[in-house]
Length: 285
Image (tube, rainbow, N blue to C red; front, side, top):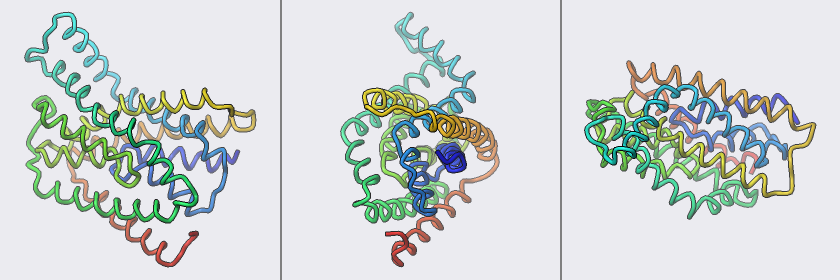
C-alpha cells in the first residue's frame, strides 16, 4: 500500500470531517484529481480505519463533556426524570436528534454509496458534489446573515435539537457535509457559532460511532481481510485521521468563538465552481 496516499487521505478525513466542507466529497475528489487507483485505499477496511480515527479524535476532545453527559443520562434513568438539569436535557436531545440520520441511513445509504462509488456513475456523482458544495455554501452564508447568534448550548430546545438532527440526515449525500449542515441549521435556529459547532460535534459522536461499527461489522462479514502489506497504510491513515481530526476540532472551536464561517463558505463556492469547470472540460471523465 502507498503510505503517502494513505497519509494524505487520513489527513483529508481528519480535517474535512469537522470543517463544514464535506469529508465524503473530499475523499472522492482527492483520489480522482490525482488519478489514484489503489484498491486498498478504496476498500471498506480503509474506510473503517479512517472513521475510527475521527471517532477517536472526537471522543478524546469531548471526553469531559461525554463523561458529564453519560453521568447525567444515568441519573435521569435512575430518577426517571429529566428535570431542569441542562446536561440531562442535552444528552436526551442528542439522542432524539440522532434518530433522523439513523432512519435515512438505513433506508438510503446503500443507494447513495452505489451512486457515488460506482465508476459508471462517476460523472453524475461529481456533478452532484459540485452542486451541493455551492448550495450548502449559499445556505451557510444566508444562515450567517439572518441568524441571531444569541442562544447558548445550555438553552437549546428539543425543537432546535431535532431540527439540527434532520439537517444531519442530509449529510449522507457527499458535498453536503455533516458538520456543515448541522452548523448551518444551528445558526438558522439562533445558536451562537460556538454553540452550534459544539452541538454539531457532540451530535456527530453517536453517528460516527454507529457508522464505524456498521462498517466494521460489514468488513468482518466479508471474505477479504487486511493483508500484511496493507497494515502499515491502515495504521498511517488511522493515526493521520485521529491527530488531524483532534487538532481540527481544537482550532475550529476556538476560531468560531471570535470569527464567522466565511472562509469555509467561499472555499465551498470555489471548489464547486472549479469542479463544474473540470467536468465541462471532460477532466478524467
